[in-house]
Length: 404
Image (cartoon, rainbow, N blue to C red; front, side, top):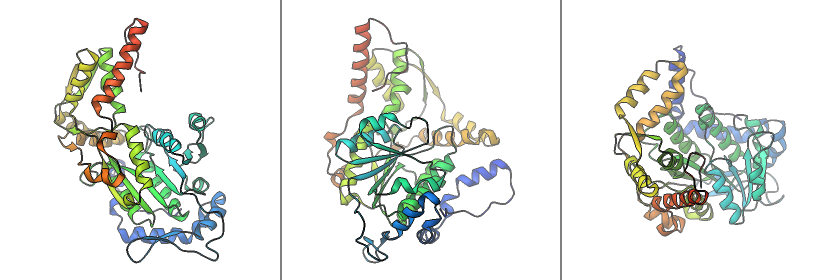
């Protein structure tokens, strides 16, 4: 796959090269993106031996952007009506084993979709997905030649993949995303759904948010119908971060800031995602998904204390310390990844609000606020189940693996 490349940097220190590399995505202009996609469509057979046949089929029915009105159309070479039509219920989920991806798979299966999951090659690739009724196909996002077979016969792609803490974020969240989008466009995918981060366009000094914003821009010129869903925060990590430590009487780490986040249950995010897939009104739009109410860290901890009947041991980390630590780690190549994560943590602890007015979004999705779980409801259900279980066994919580 012909992936876009930024100019080679001049000779500098290893860390300087890495730092500039994370900022390269936005250096690519829209014209360059369009040229890249045009070149990709003309050379789909270069995607490897396994993708040659599917690449040739894809070039016979490639989605392109019509000149008028920005609507999508189908162009053809030869008999455009030949072959088996792709069903609208065919779906490929990338990142299906993750916290959000697995909820998308379950929701899609419940709604009658034929779900295919792209998973990493392993000895037992995601058995639970097959037990639910999905099919799995092995591919490596960092190896573009392995991707085309996974896209054959697919109408909609939902991309929930992101780099793990031990992985190279640039390779997964930028380079692999470019290859995946190029492959999807060449294979004639009708709709591409991408998860981004709220306010990524306003905090491009943070490498991850910069890459998310760059992928959004890249997707806009791909020729596919797209939907970008910017997320504020998930409720699920609050269990391990705050609820369990309260029950365990373990120390909590907080910050002395007023940052507020409108958390969403990943099950509700999956519900909204499928609503976006069904509705034409959500095509070619960027929407922020937010919970009914935003909370500060202190309010989340107070809620856990109230529901858990215990007092938390909170150790606050000053925002100034985060800034100093980030600046300090920039000097060392081995700590550059930590510096990138601290940059994100610095934004999270900068007093901004990750929230959004969902009125128009609910209209677009055909939903209402009543269908969304509040944080109080989510935590109350968790604590009631755990405390009931502890009462039944007549013991105290001393384990950290309680999840809903």
